[in-house]
Image (cartoon, rainbow, N blue to C red; front, side):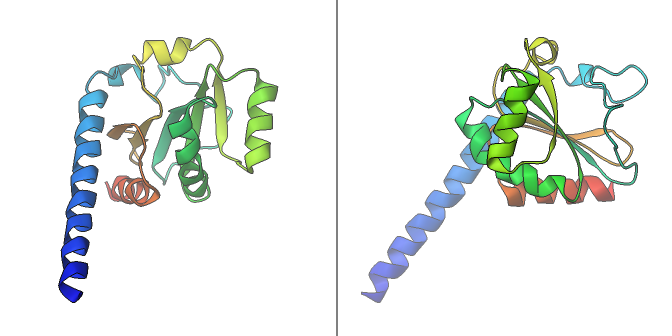
Amino acid sequence: MLTKIKHYSKEIFFLFIFIILTTNIISLYKSQSLNKERLILSTHKLIDTSHYVVETDKPLLVHIWATWCPICQAEADNIERLSHYYNVITIAVNSGTDYEIQNYLNKRGFTFKVINDKNSSLSKKLNITNFPTTFIYDKKKKLVFSEVGYTSSFGLWLRMLWAGIQ
């Protein structure tokens, strides 16, 4: 009986590692097509962050998502948790009016900052075709990570911690 438990535990562990590696490889592949040069947070901004307080001593997470995206819905709690400790700005793509997005956030208890990309013009300029997509900038607002697809809370925390020590 004990050998069966060890055997199945080992199989589950290797399956878990395989899934993590596979999803990270897929994310890396998908992020290659992003137009990262266009997402600049400087004087020639593509994203207007002037309406949001961005603390200069903390990294910044820019998260592009949609209310209709099931993976985005699953990841939203992770983004909410991070928003209490780090600079987080999200961009909702083709998700309705400002009122509809605010209603979506209120129903779920989310407080993160949202820019409404009503007609997906911003996501098109960035060549974003998969949701969610996440960009992480260090304290100097230099891009250090880009992710496509779901990222766990733990994975986001590690990336933000790394961006904070850059």
